Length: 390
Ligand SMILES: Nc1ncnc2c1ncn2[C@@H]1O[C@H](COP(=O)(O)OS(=O)(=O)O)[C@@H](OP(=O)(O)O)[C@H]1O
Image (spheres, rainbow, N blue to C red):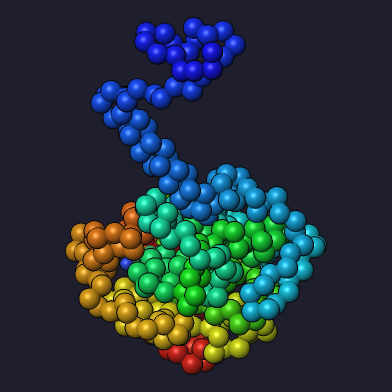
């Protein structure tokens, strides 16, 4: 009684008394299985951990992972960044793209197609190791313009070690403002001291409420606008819609309200977005010009390192991204990265970027050039930069 059982008897032979027994050493197969199981658990943990942050930025997955916590966070929030208190206890009206009337085709605030470069491109392992730091509201935002080259700029900037950015477009200031700043911040990647948090949503530039809303978050927010010849921008916009809905009317017929009189349909978003001077007026009511940087979409293709140099200076970053980072991919017809962020492989943007445009009647193109000329000149005056579109 009370002493250990020896010989062939097991502890179960003693009713009511279960005595601790040293476990026999596991046979090699069981040991290996246990090791395999432990490794599987670690891998699963790392995978779920990284998914919790990267899935939050993916629209449609917002109710999973960390995004769900934010979605249920109270809409009244105290944001700590730069000591600013933001109280958002109201339900704002839906945001309106500036002056965009009845949409014949895809609207101004349409979402970028989710090409492979759009989601947070960190691998599970690298997100696991970047789990330190904290989520901050963005200090810099690429606010436009749609089809200007915004994805290329963000992907190039992400190569910089001091830039962390959301992959997908958050559309917070136009579509999800009522979710509150806590929700928005939760979409952001973690940053360490000295790193800049960024996002890009090109529809902000044409959203009436966006300037005031961004200024309410922080009036120090740096704004980047990638602009492109409004005529090619319109054709690019149309090409994107055509790729999804091949049955839409021709570009030529959508351009005119009345083809005989040559009256341009400025309510068509593809045309409306290109009135840069008009949109800029709204931003200048809330932000000084020096807080905005205008990147040439054309130069971003011709000389990406040159344009990235300007952007790094504007953001107060060391010029780390140089021409050593790029090569021209002849098949793609565009500059690509020699190494993408978190990878050692060359990386071009996906096939939704750099599409072949349909041939447009040259007379219509000329009519559009004439139409945009005064607006372009006004835009050059306002920004102090001649983009050479005429
Ligand atoms: N390096 C590189 N690779 C591929 N594409 C490039 C690049 N730099 C700029 N561009 C131009 O970017 C245009 C798409 O612009 P956005 O990324 O702003 O489009 S979107 O609004 O986010 O849908 C896209 O327009 P399209 O050529 O009409 O497809 C490209 O011309």
